[in-house]
Image 1 (spheres, one colour):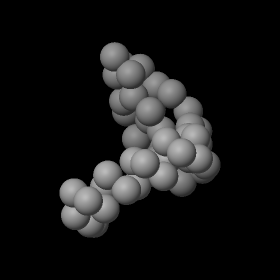
Image 2: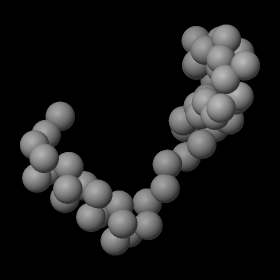
Image 3: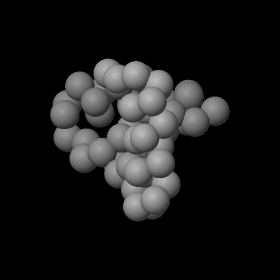
Image 4: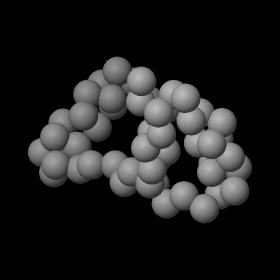
Length: 52
């Protein structure tokens, strides 16, 4: 982890270099079980996102 100062430095770096996370797949909250199944399989490349 890191300190609050480290976190602010990381946010500045992300902002400056326009870094965006890789999103593998987006699921609705109704599909939470499906999202966890995908994560268990380990086939994702990037983040699995749940949205309301």
